[in-house]
Image (cartoon, rainbow, N blue to C red; front, top):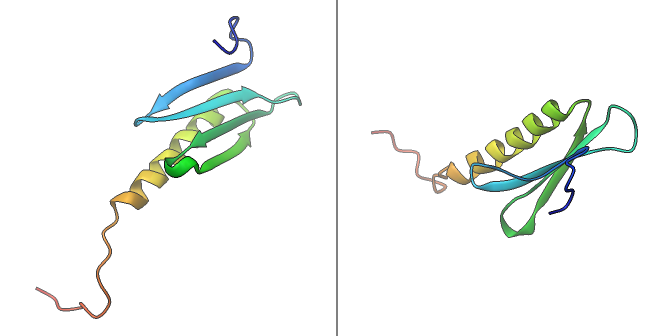
Length: 81
């Protein structure tokens, strides 16, 4: 357990099967979020509230998963059905 009293930190949260964390920053009113995607690629940022930080982390996960769902059409295959 990283922080038994839970003050200013929310670690180990999951959204759509991926973990993210939200941590209170040093400056007042700053919250930092981080997401670890596939292949140990990390994304992170900061927000003015804990809720906004969690929303941004979840939006980042949604974007990463949406990219994986895209299907590319091979070049030169422009025939219409």
